[in-house]
Amino acid sequence: MLVHALLPARCLACGRVVDEQGSLCEVCWKGLRFIGGDLCRICGRPREDGRPGDLACAECADEPPAYDIARAALVYGTVGRSLILSFKHGGRIAGASTFARWMVDAGRPMLTDGSLLLPVPAHRWRLFARG
Image 1 (cartoon, rainbow, N blue to C red):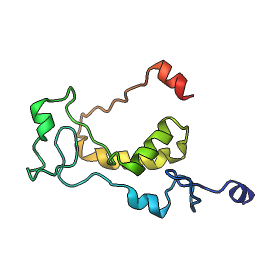
Image 2 (cartoon, one colour):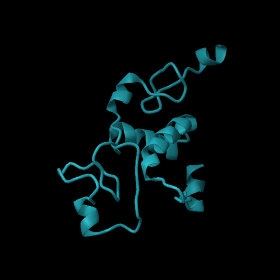
Image 3 (tube, rainbow, N blue to C red):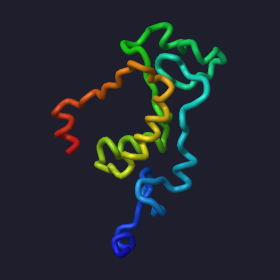
């Protein structure tokens, strides 16, 4: 289509031309680090201390957070940070459905019957600043 020729799909992270809207180029895809394996049972950060994954990490054990459980799909590294910031503050919403799938996959194990998932709304001034 003419629209695709004039406005080609771009990588959500770096802006390179890609085949499909809402996707990443090969370089950026390889730069993502999905969270999996042994995780802290509370904050969900990857465990690298050799302790069993059903335990809290040292930080959560020493100073328990105000929440029961949290999960994230990606490590907040270079590519992950770029994706999140461009989505939240840059108005680049083309990746919303992709990010939603990643979040569902990351959160599925912690959701049980009767679980309640609540969004935390941004303050109205922050929403205004984001546009």
